[in-house]
Amino acid sequence: RHEAAGESGISHFLEHMLFKGTTTRDAFQIAWSLEAVGGHLDAFTGREATCFYARALDEDLDLALDVLADLTLRPRFDPADVTKEKQVVLEEIHNSEDTPDDRIHELFADVVWKGHPLGHRILGSKESVSAFAPSTVAGYHARNYVAPNLLVAIAGRFDWDHFVSEVGARFSDARAGV
Image (tube, rainbow, N blue to C red; front, side, top):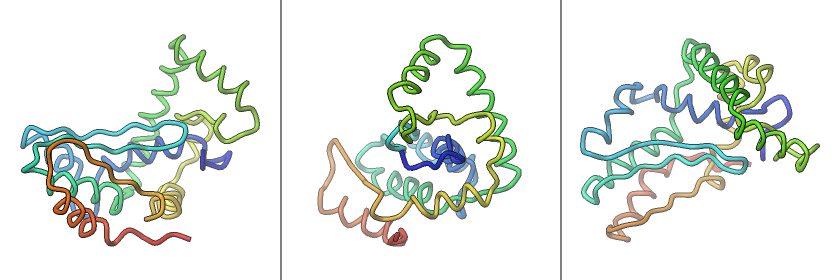
């Protein structure tokens, strides 16, 4: 929804990139962080939002919040990772084009949302993804992953006051945005 025409697919691409490493964790540490305590960390991108989520026991709430804050606020955009991930997403695009139920939804969106950013492909196009550079991805992140655009939600058994305190502590360095 917030991507310019030349940025088509950048939100999805960014979702991939955030799992490649942060300023404090490498890809293995991110992947293993919650898995080591029986939890789960994942993400998905839709037309209007990207969601990063964690499932963990209540005693691992602080860890889950720390990892989510690290992913969203402190990514590392290594040029080698950008190059490698472009190939992964280009393969995703290729596979999507060969999957009839994915393809029909994209063709439907082309008609219904013609000329509107919601009509952009979630995965982007081969041309747009191929053009992504580390600076492009970092710039999009800096403009969009700001405090007014971040929502932290929780469900399950937890202490509300502790949760609010930890979100405040973990996400306090989110940029204010413009």
